[in-house]
Amino acid sequence: MKNSKPNQDAVELLKKLIATPSFSKEEDKTAAIIESYFKIRNIPFKRHLNNVWAVNKYVDASKPTLLLNSHHDTVKPNTQYSKDPFLPTIEGQKLFGLGSNDAGGCLVSLMAAFCHFYANENLKYNIILAATAEEEISGQNGIESILPLLPKIDLAIVGEPTQTNLAIAEKGLLVLDCMATGKAGHAARDEGENAIYKAIEDMKWFQQYRFPEISETLGEIKMSVTSIHTDNKAHNVVPAVCHFVVDIRVTDVYSQEQLLETIKSHIHSSIKPRSTRLRSSKIDKAHPLVKAGINLGKQTYGSPTTSDAALIPAPVLKCGPGDSARSHTADEFIYLSEIEEGIKTYIKILEQVV
Image (cartoon, rainbow, N blue to C red; front, side, top):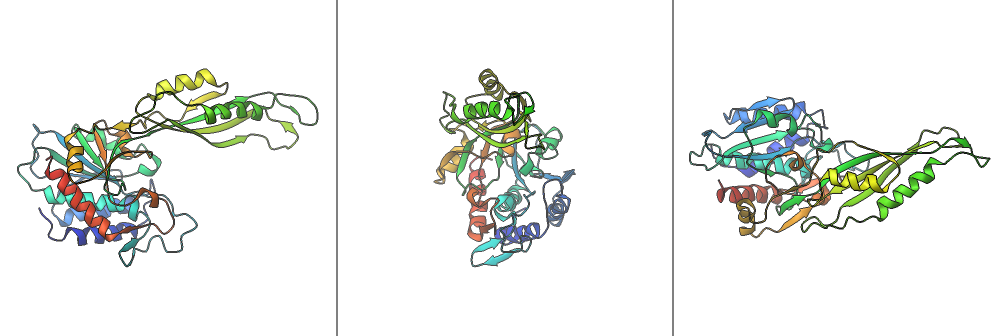
């Protein structure tokens, strides 16, 4: 089924999604909008929790499977919005609204591209379009929950705002809950062992240490202490315990297990990883999917941000309309021309591959 007006339909769909709050774990109403999009086009679909997916018409079990994926959840609007985040507004060539750039523009562009290929009988790949939930919180009820329900994924495009350039690698994420332990005492006397001071020594290590191996596409491992607190309520007690959180952006040259081993050998605080699920991802620059984008004049780069690409067990290209710098900002917007370019880019890349 080829849509005669994909740009207009994509914009109208994006307006509906913007107008419907879809915070992570609360995406049921936008999932229903996506279901309706497929129903109108007589495209069968499935839904699990708030994830909706469809498969091309002429599925052949002997063919490999290509996944087109983006998310329909959003963060909550920040307090600096001057516009109604749920009122889709076009001013000039800009469409304003929460989730317009991250990642609504990518999602509706991928859906338009999927419809373009849906009824093609001669595809080299089966194509699955999956609109998924909980990406913004890396939740387990998002894409991870439907992977067991899908055929084996051999290749994927994840829609995130990249200015339609080609993110051929992205950093993974490792979050550590750390605890320095001292001994309580009275602050007025020379008593106790101050856990804050012990924590500071470890935090200095996180600030100063550099892992020797540097990724060709992603650069250095980045470690940042992002939170610190004690359980103290009283000002005159030397704290026995100090908690702090470390955000680590992982590259493709170290496993998360290797990072943890190195960290544990250098710091005294106890460490508890929140998760090791969000691993660095990479697709070879010589892969046909990447070469297809390069043939269109697109640039390759390594992305410092983490997406659902981290959870897909296959080579993944991250690519989409919009600009990552606009994500999570006040008065978020996407250019209408970017949506048009996104649809064209996806179709032209896929034409060379599928």
